[in-house]
Length: 464
View (tube, helix red, strand yellow):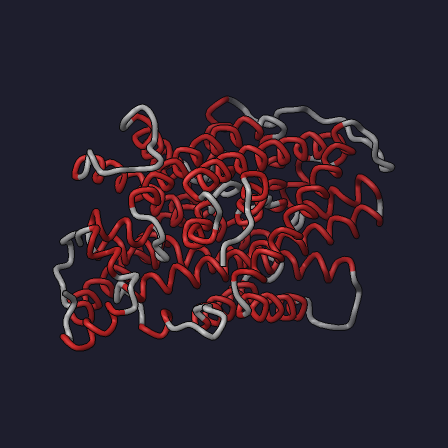
């Protein structure tokens, strides 16, 4: 079924697919003040180079359920694909959604005082979102549309109230900048990067979007720009009503801001925003990752059960698998601001690496297939992909201003990719039965979308 998405509704769809993250926003602004807006603008522009590259890849290989996995398989082979997608995408996304779900449980427990464990709020929300996604893309779209308008509207109104000093709480006097120099602002780009990642979640469902070749790239760009605008207004509101130090230290800075701005009414309102944000995150993550897992299963990169669908055409095992592990990570990070901050930065590195592969895929396919028809092409030749790669590498090298934390992030990332590398090597050689680094022709990758590919592969017993 085709989703009735115009350009306007598409960018709201993508805005909600990677929506506003009030916790990361509060921690970033609390660190360096209003000048965090500059870091957000840089991060937004870098993410626009990524969505441009992904739009070109989607134009060259349309209707691929695995998205980035299939692009990378056609360019770099199965080994980089499996490592970047399992480590840099699946683990990262599940972990980040779990972290944000723990923030939701903290917000609910802080506002609604019931004699129950806070994690039960997350459990209930996880079950509801999982069941909704098992009913298919129509239910997913309906939830996303509703949540998008409520979330953006609430954040915008709260930001405007704070920015113009219209709140009922006491205004605070504090500097606009807490940064010692411009280098500290640039180093916060890595934190700001987290606020914009994931617009590419729309790629696996782009086949369901009207006029996808126009609406998908345009929707992603407009969605990122709108996120940047709304969050900039929120930062200006933070400056007037919430001390920077308290904002940075809080596990739920948006609740702190809401209470300082409008008292108990503001706290309840921001709890509502937190609920919308986590529903948005989890709904899009469950739907998007289930589709990506389905595409990877078609490439024999994951167990075949991930490719099976229910009567609604939903890859049900992926939906259940992702939902369960989101809840596991939510329980592990339950309410700890330090754990939340660290896991967000680790997840950012994973995600950044997958984005570097997207830019490399564009450059490789430009070289291999220069005359292949593309309904969308990144302008200025290799300029923007190269800028995207350089900027992303810089963010990885400056992922934290604390040298000890930075080394720990690199260590966790390195160990994870080492383990994934060992696993990937044996999976490719034993299960996939193909060369580890040999790229697969585009025609063959796209043929994997056909259900007959399973039958042929099963009969031969080989990856051919």
